[in-house]
Length: 148
Image (cartoon, rainbow, N blue to C red):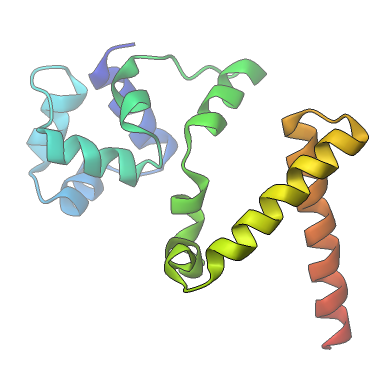
């Protein structure tokens, strides 16, 4: 898939018009059209803004990878999304917690817990992440119930 085809596909999947994209990037609708028809390519800064707009990496944006409807294609897309950045739009703490003084101590503790948990149960990385996330989510739900 060409860069233009990729841009068109990503825009449609995001439910945006060419005008919407143009407004968000500070360019004309015609410029967006030229990118999507491979008549021109976006400047580097605009490519970065496009990757942020569509929540994909710069590499994915220009890779020409086809976004298929099969599970493999979907998994490739999911792996390319910067979930921290995507969720930080709704939960701003995700984009700033790394700068909180003392947070590194907890990052190290959680990392050690992750390694120990993975080794103790002989889980792979994906299973480890999914189970630990689920444990934290269950804790969150219980805390939320108690506060009602």
